[in-house]
Amino acid sequence: MAQRNVYSSKGEPEDAQSAEEVLHSVMQELDALHENVKGQLNQDITRLQTEKNHLIDDIEGLREQYRKLQSQQMESLSGRYIQQQQLWLKQLAQVLAHNLQDLLVQRFNELSANSGHSLSSPIPSGEFPLPMPPSNYEERASELLAALDDRIDRSFQMLEQDLSSYESELSMRLNNMKTLELQGEELLQNLVNRIREELAEEEYLDNPFDAQDSYPEASTNSIRPQVLEPTPADAPRPALPQPSAAPSAAAKAASQVQAGLILALSSAVVLSMFNVCLRILIKSKNPRMIFGLFELEGVVTRGFGNSLLILLMRLIVVMALMPVLATFLYPSVWKDIRRLFQSGDRALWSKVLGSAFFLFLSQVLIYLAIGNIPAGIAITIFFIYPIVTVLGSWILFGARPSTIGFLAIGGITLGLILAGWPSFAAPAPGGGNVGVGVTAALASGITFAGYVLLTQMAAGKLHPIPFSLVNFAAIFVFSSLSLWVPLSENFAPQIDQNVWPGLIVGGVVLGVLTLFSYLLNNFAIRYAGAALASVIGTLGPAMTALFGFIIINEKLDPVAILGMIVVTLSVAAMSVERMVAPQKKAG
Image 1: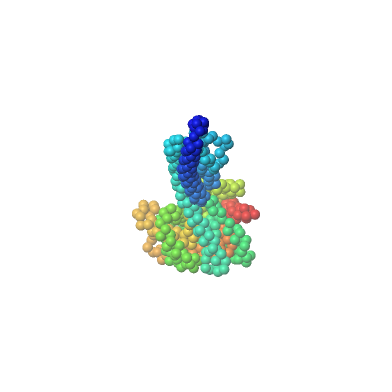
Image 2: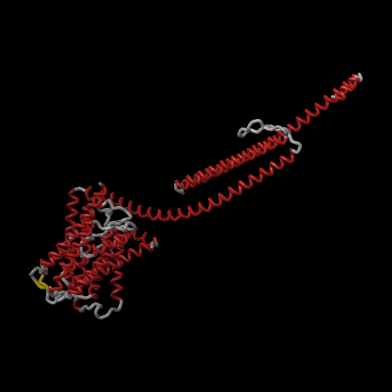
């Protein structure tokens, strides 16, 4: 401007016009430079906006991955862990987005400050001003991008560490879920077996000769030892509730229930006849008078080996007829047995064979007891097994007896003392050994309790009919192997060659009575229910003593009769309580 005034003062208009043209040219060049720098800044800002969009897309991708992980975890983890993980990922995404936005705002503020154009107001979220270009724009832009890359790298490293920690925790949770899945499969298998039994029961209601009724004590009642009626004191299984006993009996017609009670009573009568026939089969000191009409001498002497032989003769008849009877009662028996052999379930096989072994010992011991003391007393002492069963269920299953249960245990104990005490006060009729008879009866009851507990553990995995058939077959094998093993003279069988015909006839009679009682009891459970049938089964000792008196004139001491009554009432109280308990729970 000073030069223009000088030139003007000298009166040179041409020079003034030339200066104005130069100034105009310089202004145009400055405008062009401004537009060029502005365009470069716009390109850089556009590129930064693109980077920002990429970062936002990456954040959205992370959020999408989070949503996928969340959907996967919703199926496996509990609600508490899902909420924690959701909150953690949400906070992580918010912090990452907030840090990136703060970094971009800070860098653009620095650019604006360096260019001499400070912002007069805060930068709104997502909006950036257009600052004037600094002289060292390219250097500052490079620093900005380097800092941004470094911050993003650190953020992603932290995210990778957190994801690794999360992955390890997720792997541990998945392993726990696998364990829970195996437990769930086992529970579902038990449930499926139970539903199959329920469906079989419904099918039986349409045709009672096509399917086996599903009842809660089928396993113990259908394969009970042939010396007493169904097990009335089995403790209920704690794992699965058994609501089908009393409700199913209440739902049946009154005529069916009456028919079932008659069948149960008939089964008890047959069992009592079985016990008396076994008593007749064993020799006594003097021949026994049958119905007061004729004398009949026994076939074999009392002893452990002869009891094994009697059991084997009975089982030969049972194994010859039992498959036909089992197929009639449950047509799918062979499919279930084939499935049992193909399953390879060692735990189930151990329970099945273990229960058969305990039942085998119980049978041999009760035969030995009946050969030495009156049958009614032997069966009464045998009823110690409800006490052992209840206490064993309390220990194994946590099924604590009720007040009535404890009173019944006390009553059974008192009755056993009253029933057994007169036997020691006087010699046993027929010349038996009282000590051996009482001890064998007690041991038989204890081993039968072991059979009941193992049967309860296997309940629900195998239908009662194939379970019975496998048990009888196992007992047959145990009896055969026991007779093949060399025994001492006191335990070996002692049989006269002349008594084999009578022993064979006796084995046939005992086998037929066994199957007949089994069939009657099975239909009694179908019509009246297992609970009512078990109540009738408590009459076993009393009916055995009654038939012993009627058939072979076997008299009992009044104190022994009193003990027998106390035991019968106590066991009946247990059975009635177990029959009423499901109705109280349902109500």
